Image (tube, rainbow, N blue to C red):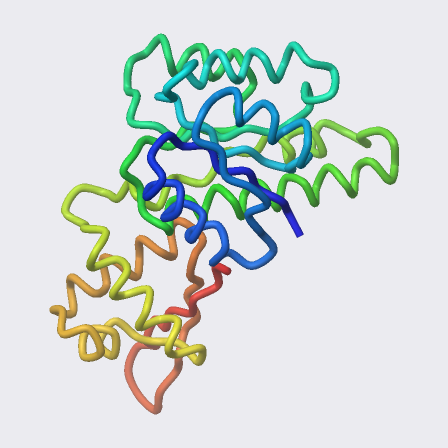
Length: 229
């Protein structure tokens, strides 16, 4: 179980983000902090595997918290993901230099956070396998660890909306045997071209796979199967 500390000055937002985390298999929230000082104490006391850190805190900003974590030998290795409405380049640059794993801009969807959590879990698994060997075998091992992070689920191609994407996702999850674009359109009440655009987006981002379904006559039909956790 990957243990997460949620840090946010807004009690309700912290509760929402904690709910997002708890919905992801393999993750649990071990604590919530609403100030920078409380966050530093919680990291030392609770030893979370991952901190979801806000920038706007009442006593010190998240970058100051990040620097304090890196300056303390007991917390220097703590993994951090920034979750904030801060959009200025200096904050993003300082977060990157502080070694954060990612930077999610509020507001974001549960799916966007889930993608980053699953990426973190996959990264931890890769590093654990490499640790058993004590060294990397070749450049491919390193490339695998530094592989491109999945595109945030909240960032959709132009013309696609998060609400409709979640509707198509629900339809796919409800049919583990797979859906064609026509069947998806019927299930979601979308047009067939619209349904196919969302299905292809999920296939392109690795959340669904395409298999060909052969009928009695004519061209094989593309069938989409949900593969993401």
